[in-house]
Length: 97
Image (tube, rainbow, N blue to C red; front, top):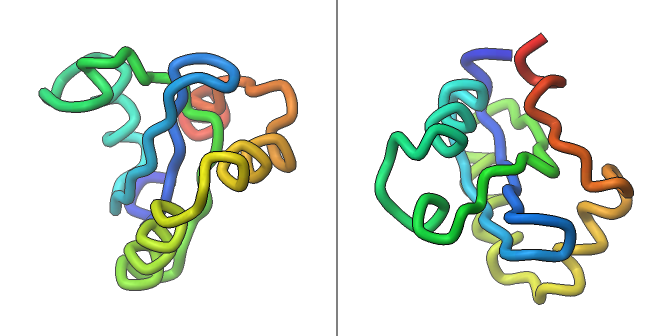
């Protein structure tokens, strides 16, 4: 799952601070977040746990979805995570297999 357009959600903990992002290389981008390789929100607030992601056929589709999710209220975002990942497991091992 290297070069693949994707939207992802990171969390600081269950029901904690959320971050929504988009990338063309999910493994690389999540590694950067987990290792504080890039300055910004996730480093500042310790948001490193991958709790949700969805692959897309194109970057255009992924960016459209990211913009949509960013407009959602918090309850909808939490429900999205809960539906696919009710235990709020870190999905990092799943994407690096």
